[in-house]
Image 1 (tube, rainbow, N blue to C red):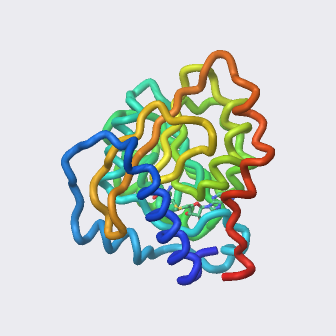
Image 2: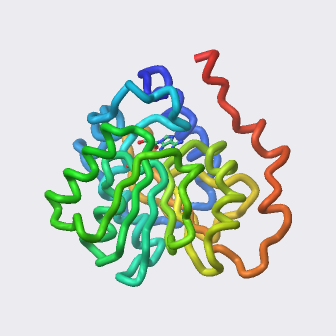
Image 3: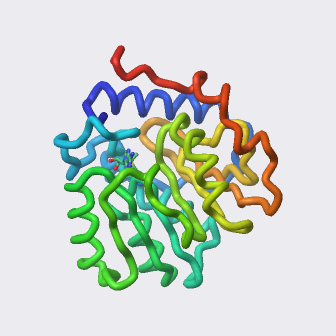
Length: 231
Ligand SMILES: C[S@@+](CC[C@H](N)C(=O)[O-])C[C@H]1O[C@@H](n2cnc3c(N)ncnc32)[C@H](O)[C@@H]1O
């Protein structure tokens, strides 16, 4: 993943899903910049070396949307914020710097892990955040209280049983742009205009009693699967 055609597909899919979900969004003042738009479409720092293992390409979340994600999750200094597919580390770093939370990033791309560690040192929060190189599906989430996502819709659905199994009741999940299949978000918040249109942040809270239909994802994956071999 991560080639130009794949990134274009990612952005197009994002736009289509945003249009589909526009009706649920909560209005807020637009807040974006040209630099943020460019950051969304011209990522830097990703390595192609291990890109074949990726479940989603590297497209960084803008700083305005990062702020919205952390606000919507109600992050505080009591939280441990996990970003699954952490890119250059901006979400855990912002959670530590702005809210005093602890942060953990799981990222498969070793070049991005190195970049995230350097950014954490530069931001003065290296003691509060950790970046681990590895597959997010193998990471233990037991100590997370907030999980942040900017992945594909299909990946969110595949993650759903793991999130519900390993997180505790009351823990929060926030996702940039993409929902989690049939699990209805409790909030859908407009987070500003990106270069492909409106950006949204979705919030779920892990319930005390897990409905069986949330942990059974059979039948939900196929409708979202992108056949990468045809790209
Ligand atoms: C859309 S980017 C989001 C980056 C960051 N979370 C942000 O919002 O700025 C998705 C990230 O997930 C990483 N990724 C993709 N598949 C992964 C996997 N199986 N395990 C860990 N990281 C993965 C990619 O390398 C990329 O950095």
